[in-house]
Length: 237
Ligand code: G6P
Ligand code: MG
Image (cartoon, rainbow, N blue to C red; front, side, top):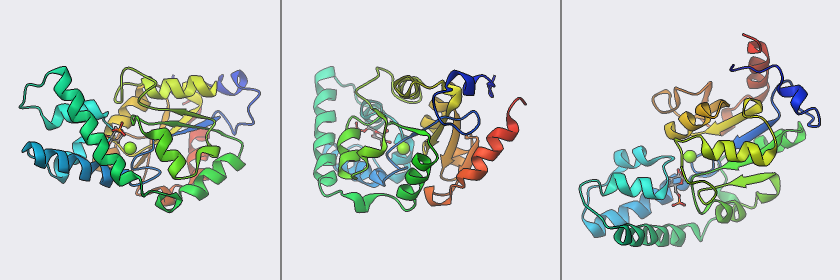
């Protein structure tokens, strides 16, 4: 089930290596450190609204949609749909103020090299981010030309940990889920990718990304050849 031998035949048109034909990246915390900008904008809103917020709570928000994050933040308060909407808009205003200064220098170390290698090797490349600002941030980072497709929080009803975003990305790329490798930093994202039937590389500590198939401390540490070799070796197991 996990290693489908048919994947290469289905996608005979793609110059894939073994059974893998695409990589799908999460954005926040993987390509760039927007986690810090989200933290600062949630913190500003939380202080104004007098609700508790700290880095430990912020960690719990990693990978969740804006709406799901505010549900965690304001869990003790009963909010009308209109109030929730206004809070989401304010949080986003604060985030966009901070994100305005972003540029290609905000790519995390090793990202450019990894994207180059993936493209050089002929894999398709997709983005699957819960963020509704994904296209804007990718343009700021000046890496839009790398991606064959971008799926974001505007494309699906159910954000991560539901598998929808990753399935949306695979469909756009015209590849089977089993032929995709996901790169993720959040527990919610890893759950989503696994549920989509994809192989997952987790970026971060064991406590956070331990459910991934492979784990590296940072993007710069990813050994792509080793990952591909191991996936091939496991084939048919
Ligand atoms: C990603 C990030 C979250 C962020 C969410 C929503 O999943 O990991 O930290 O809150 O997207 O982003 P948005 O830009 O739509 O507020
Ligand atoms: Mg992330």
